[in-house]
Structure formats: C-alpha cells, structure tokens
Length: 143
Image 1 (tube, one colour):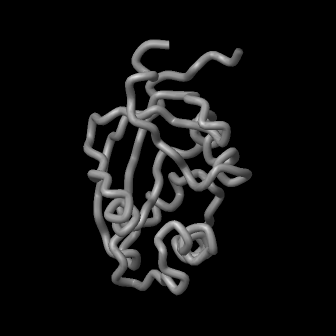
Image 2: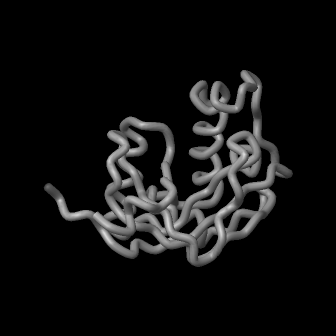
C-alpha cells in the first residue's frame, strides 16, 4: 500500500460507533478539524502534531483507510475555541456552546477518565485544548 503503511496512526475517539461516525465524516469531507485536551498528549507521551505531518487514519477495526495531512495546529483555552473550529468538526454543532457540551460529555465519560487514570477528570474554561485542522491526502480503495 506504500506510504500509508509507514505513517503513524491517527485515531479519532475510541473504537466503536463514535469512531465510525467520525471516520465517515472525514472521508466524506465533512470533518476537517478535531480537538484534544493537551493532557491527552502528555499522558500518551506523544508530541503535538505539526503542520505538514501525515498520519494514517484508522477505523474501529484498526484498518488504515486514508492519509491525513495536518494543515494547522493551535493551543487555546477551552473557553476560547472559535466557532469556525467547532463547525468544521463536522458533527452538526449549531454553536460553540453545543460543541463544548458534546466534548465535555466525551471528556467526562468513563472511557476518557479511565484512559487518563483520573475518575474525576473535569475540563474547565482554562483547560488547554489542541485544535488541529487536516486534509485528506489519499484514501485506501475499498476491497
């Protein structure tokens, strides 16, 4: 398959229905941005994404389905996430408040709290969020 096999993996959400929905939105061009808390990178000891970096997008079966290229990265306080970013997450949000409520539900969920090793993890206005924009460079042909 070439380049895609040599790239680091990009996972959106945990495997399951949410990941499947997000991957489909990316492949359809509806989702061009994503958000993570800075602490997620620190827990995984992963460097922050950089513009021009490429990743292999994986689905819930850990199958590489597309190559993504980072086009922009910013770190902002949660309270400062702009509407354009929330809109471009492609999940149908109608306002930043709706985007935040959806993300708080995810970040405060059992799976994320377990991943972080903190059963009471909570985001605040001051939580640093990594805002990433990306483009689909290529897709793996369906078998």
